[in-house]
Image 1 (tube, rainbow, N blue to C red):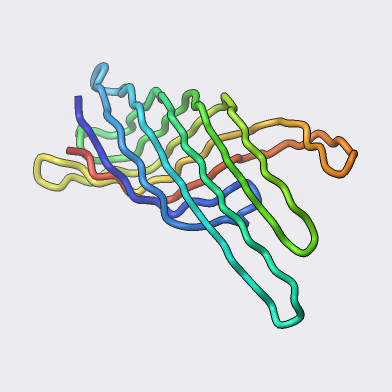
Image 2: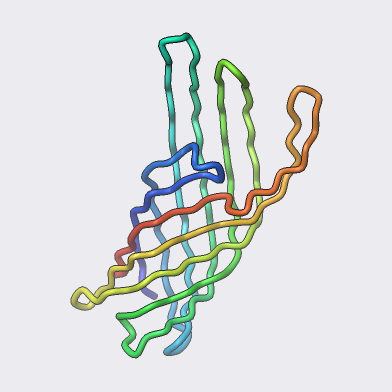
Length: 166
């Protein structure tokens, strides 16, 4: 087992909330080409904007993602090269938003696909990755002011960052 910790720049489906996030997990080598990887990813973001014309936007957004991935390595060395992983994630989302044009408080618990791709570099006995993580698609019904619409998010969350693998 190889534990890891990561720092990412993350955005929600609309890329309205963008900011830093953290990731922690562990990799289990199944053989030379495959790794079973599990992680927890936390993305908190708040906005508070007031404009000169009196318009405002205030929001609190939090996601917590737990994922399990099967990773395929395309490299000659264990500690260096490209990788691609896919699997399943559980995502808790809490979006509390208020503005001059709308108000909502949405809480969602969803099960959705998860992807990770990137490149790993050796650092002594450890590794450092440059990677892209994504979850989605997700589908849900949105009820607003008596109207119901079906919403499809191609990516519910996307992040780019790095992991340090111990």
